[in-house]
Image (cartoon, rainbow, N blue to C red; front, side, top):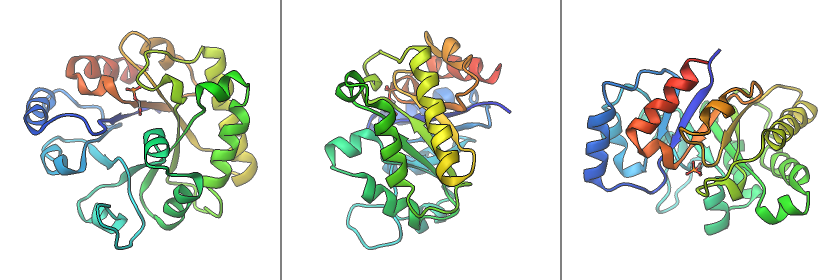
Length: 235
Ligand code: PGA
């Protein structure tokens, strides 16, 4: 089947860096299961690459200054969007109810719903409860689950170099899969994100329960990103 690889470029890279990146990666990236999520202003440049593109955030069709709607994304040939990334939750106060509004009203687009616990919640052994709450509210009244992918991103693992133990990871991912089956009666793909890099990708890739990876920092370094893709492809 092959695991999917999503590259979350966040609000990183200047225009010159983008041009250099595209130039360096363009003939080398050949895995059909890669989706890159660049900054919106660079989307046209990234269209030169022969890969799928996604938005880092999206809204339902509405008139809101500074936002990008589902119809606009579709008109640019974009078929994926991340929703509820923890940086948006913590810095822009997006909550599960807002996230649910987006998901409910966006059809025919691959939605990557990010969930994950904070360090404090982890220490208090609340991980499972937090994940279930996030899923329950974000997916409330969402009947069509076929385009939904969940990315499990523990907040304490994002950009820190730390990753969960394989035990913790398997436990969290099975909790997510089982809970979605319980409330939606369907299977869902679950990705792992948070400090994935060329050093840890082998051990992460061996976890069958993981359906792919959401990669931040490491997707910006062409060589490292290509090495990661190779390992995942070979799976
Ligand atoms: P990271 O980011 O790989 O740099 O930890 C992942 C993410 O925030 O999606």
